[in-house]
Image (cartoon, rainbow, N blue to C red; front, side):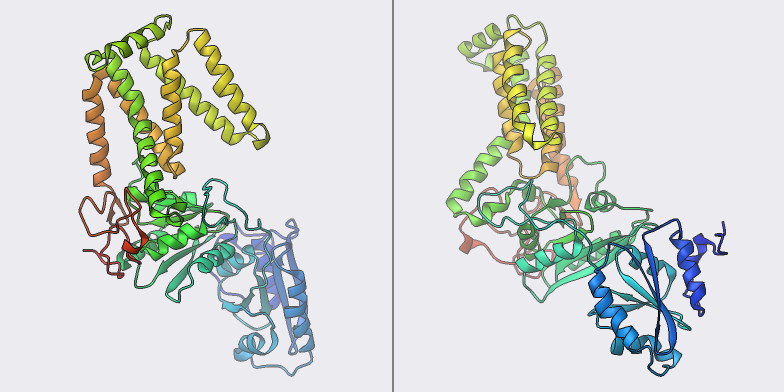
Length: 501
C-alpha cells in the first residue's frame, strides 16, 4: 500500500535515490516510519553550494566522529564553488570527508541496510547515489573469558557479539596475508551481516565454494545468528550429530583455519562455525595443543573412556541384569538383586526416571542464576538422591551408574555433541531393555552406519579412517608436536594444499 507521503514501501527498496533532495527525505521517512520512529535523525546542511543531508540511527554511531569527520569538513566547504554533478560524490569522498571508510550506495535497499547497521548516509542534491560513511560505534560486550569452553592452559579470550571485533580476534591469532574474509548480507527483510573466513591455498576450494553458495542461497526474512545459519546450510538436517563445530574461542577458530577449515561468523553471535569437520573434532578439547603430548594423550584417553561409558553403561546394565545374568559374577548379581529387592519399579522405568531427573537438574542449573546454581546441585544430587534411595524408589547401584554416565557425558568438549549422545543413549537403553545385547549391537551398527554416510561440506564424517587417508597423529592420541605437519586438515593430504587425495 502507498505510504501517506506517496511512496510504496514494498517497491521503493529497488529504486535509486531521486534527483530532488526532498524526495529522498520523504522516501526515507516512508521506509523508517518517520515521525513515529524517533531513532532516525536527519541533519541538513550545505556543501559546495549544494543542499545535502545525512541520515543515521541515533546510538549506533560515534557523535564526535560525526561532528569532526563529516559535518565540520562539509560546513567548511559550504562556500566552495559548485562541483559538476557527475563528480560531486567523488569530490566529497576524496576531498572533503575525513572518515577513513566510505563508499557509494545506489539503491534504497542498500541504503536502509547500511543505516540499520549503524552507517551514516549522506545525500547530495542532484545526485542519483548516496555515500555510506563508516563512523559506527555500536555498543557491545568487551572481550572477556569464555563461558562454556573453559580451559586450563591456553588463551582465555572469547568471542563477543560484535562481528568486526570477532574478525579482529581471529586475525590476532592467525596473522597471515592469505587469510581472506568475505562479507555477506543474510536475510531478505532484516539483513544479518556474516563473514566467511578461510586461508587461501590451505582450505579446500571446493568446500569454500560450497559454503559461499549455501550462504548466498539462504532465502529467509530474518536470520538471527550462527545457530540459524548452521541449520540452514548443514548437509544432513535430520541427523542427530552436528556437522559444524561451534566454538567461542578465537584461538580454536584460528587453529581450525590453519588446518584447512573455514569459519563463519555473524553479528549478534559470540560463536564461530568451523567446517568441514570430522567426528574427531568434537572429541578434542581446546587446550590439548597447549599440553605436553604425554598429558594430552592421557587426558584424551580419559575423555574417550568417559564418552564410551556415557553411551553404553546404562544399556549394558539393563541388558545384563534382565537377559544375560550368566555373564555377571554371582556375588555382583546377588548384590544387585538385594539392592533392588524393595524397589517397586522395573529397571527400565527406574533408569528412565533417573535419566530424566539428572537431565532436569542439569538444565535447571544451566538456566537459573549462577548464585544459586551450587545450591541446586546440592539439593538435586545429594538430598533428593539420598531420599529416593531411602524411600526404596531407586536402587543405590543405579545412582552410581547414572552419576558415571553424567560425568562421562560432561567430558564431551562440544555441547551439541553431548546432547546428541544423550539422545543416542536413550535409543541404546531402550534397545537393551527389549532385546538385550543384540539390540545394543544393532543400534550401534546403525549409528556407525549413519555416521559413515554423513558428510560435512563434501568431507566424510569418519575420515581419515573411512575412507582412510594420510593424516596427522592427532586423533585418539596427541603425539609429539614435531610429528604434526602444519596446514594439514584430517581428511586432506598432508601437503598444505588442502586437496582431496
